[in-house]
Image (cartoon, rainbow, N blue to C red; front, side):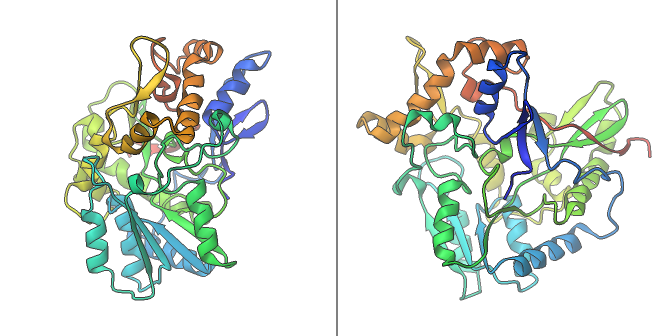
Length: 375
């Protein structure tokens, strides 16, 4: 269970950022949540493991196979999940079930990765599920209070892998066996400050799995912390040349913000490729399109232009109760003046007109020292 990734609010563990903000803003002293990511696990990050990244990936795949009876891989065909897939395949380690989502709409996840998987996977014992999330029932939103439940937050109407409902479906497939859903989380995020390297974690990439049972991040785990530490050192070395010209504190979250070639960055941290050329970059660029947008005549939120929201658009036009609950929950964030003022006062929301749902600045965990830029 990923219960060691959480927001700490008044001594409580919270797995939903919006619930954390509500509790913080309503406290008598307005405590702001601390984002905690496996406290203590990576304290020795300054010691780079001697093993190669590939060797550590081999060990991680074997570790997961030995730990669980039934393994499910969430596969998009991007650089992360493709590297996870390759770690199992090149070592002839069986994966019980691979789930690949694609969308016929132009949203970055085209069918190419699914076609590649079907054509190239050679283990006949693996169950392969290919789905267009716009053609299957959406995530269930029983009422508008879903937005404040104390569990991983599913911030999309369609299924985003993995999430709570997907994990529960895998539990049924496992038929009582021990099981895990494996995801390609997470790439390194580094801070350069006063010529010192630090590693940190962002809350947004793991919001869909915080606190969930039976989820395993492949690259970041307390069972093998050296795997993530290794990729942090690899990224620091790759960035050394460009980092030496930095005179102010710099946050390296990904290549696009720094004008660095996407695949060069990914190969520098050990990613072995992708199922379809340039599919990973396409996904990242398209996901920057707003999911929801504010109605210009009211505070209501309406379906935005992201084509991946086709199902929500269809359901909202049909006055579907599930879509109504989803939008009502998000709209509650938009109209919650106490929360918005709280986030503005803490510098987490930069614009009073921004929606809390889409606009708050992502939180990071306490930085951990990696080493000196000059070493």
